Length: 115
Image 1: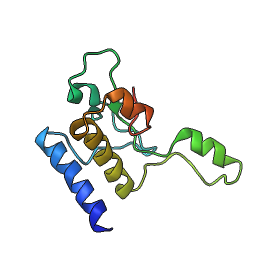
Image 2: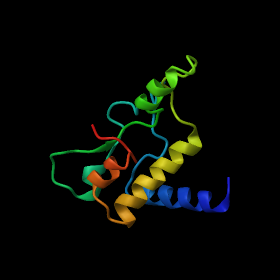
Image 3: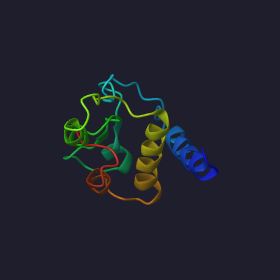
Image 4: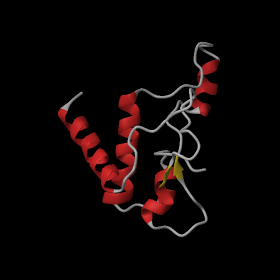
């Protein structure tokens, strides 16, 4: 991993620790975060529901799998690698807590999914 990536992930881990967020999210085999363990992005941003947005999926994208299924039957729902998960979590926290973007912005950019 390069230094910029490592620094970015370290920033995300620091932001998570400051807010008592568990960095190592427990995942189902398909990449969904186990029920009750997703990050409530709306609460982190101080948003008033509805809607409530969560970071609750760190797996392969279903639309991408469907598109690629015609080429390879070997692809199946699965969790992303730890490095990709770290990058996504860091990006979500940086967008929400440093850049102060809305949860809607984050979800619309596919940096995390809504519930």
